Length: 249
Length: 262
Image (tube, rainbow over all chains, first blue to last red; front, top):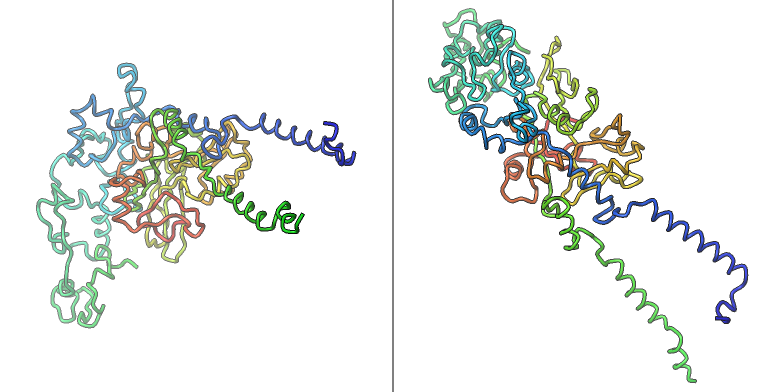
């Protein structure tokens, strides 16, 4: 023991004591500051993961609703709202699933709720059913005519404008106002009942528009005439012009 | 003593090199913890039987299906008790309007929670559509890189979470996120963000926004899974992510993403 450190100069010995103390302070401080479970799985505090995972659930999920309300589920399963979760309209229902008698989920009524999805907005995708709230059966609650669990129209629509109101309104201010929709769109009658399965078609040839617009055509004398053999190249007319509002820029 | 024996007694250069090579092999000893079966088992037990090492979560968004109803933003605020103020969101919906003159306007009134007002401009519009946004749960997350204390992290199943007890509220991650997906929680004074509803995933439920989306514009699923709506979505669509040039490798995939979307 006496020979230990014999050749080491004094100043080095003293310095090493300081270094050891600093290192010890560093490691003790580190041990106190960094939580025990930090880095157990990766560079994070393990219990943080469990804290996040233990958060309370508010939306119970479609499956558990079906367990009791199977009648409504099966009604909904074949309608337009088949992809809709119950809680989209009825709100978070986890508490209702725990104590069904004490907590009743929200039930939309009146005319405020359905337009959140079904009010007309130009940015919504083509074909999505939309209405102008102000002119669509004013004052009547939506559920008077439509069953939200199977929301088909109360009767088979008579005209196209029942669903395609925006196109009807656009056409109403255009030069094509007096042309009925079915003149250009061959529409199977079943389209009114199953709109997605039976679709209307569109004019396939340039000659179709040419009936009025070709040079030398006698139909619709006020219509603009062009030489359809040269105008527009290989495109069908509606690939450039918007027939519901041909004046559109 | 011969010269040769003397050299043997000392360490030769060859020996030193050998030792160096051998000890440097230590650098390659795997220290990746989730690969340890014992720890993985413990993790599973703590999460109520859910094994995070078996999944990798992602979301697909079909832009042409979004109707801008804002039910996702509403459900997210309800599920996660996001502050009511109209500028704190974990997910929100943006409306893009592309004008004839090339100008692009974006609005997201209160994140779309109360829907959108009709467009009233007199200008000519070329196209308009809605884009739902949320944390992209990047594979290469800048927010995790910049956190000075390790309070934001990636779970073994690819979700980016915040440790709200450990976060010091320095806002570095909020600055670093290129998607604006984080905010400082006004009461807790810590960073807050989308968790992919981690508390729901572990119970086998879909995130709240996906649960309530009426048109299935959002598709949630396991990227490691074989047959799922998300895998079909990835197979059938042309996919893009937001800001791919940043190399963040988001796990929120958009189909038919317009170039106007930033």
